[in-house]
Length: 111
Image 1 (cartoon, one colour):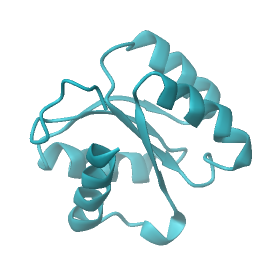
Image 2: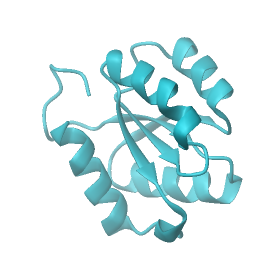
Image 3: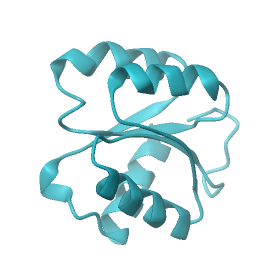
Image 4: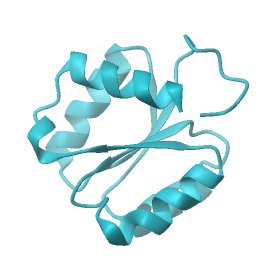
């Protein structure tokens, strides 16, 4: 999260989710909570491309647990170094609920 961000300000998200249905679900919930989804990526490679394309316009990322395995650590570290907080959503959290997503957002704000 960018240091100047107000704790109540809407956040701008990068979603890294290979499932179209899950990413649409998550995007709708985030938007209902007042946030913006800046980009959606289906792979780590695409996530890097989207991050470069939207540099400075992403506050946080939510990664699918399948994408966020051990080999995703370099991506998470790279995003963190650039001030982008990351949360990992596992399969047990699907379908996403507004309460669960709001909790994830609060954890990301606290980072």
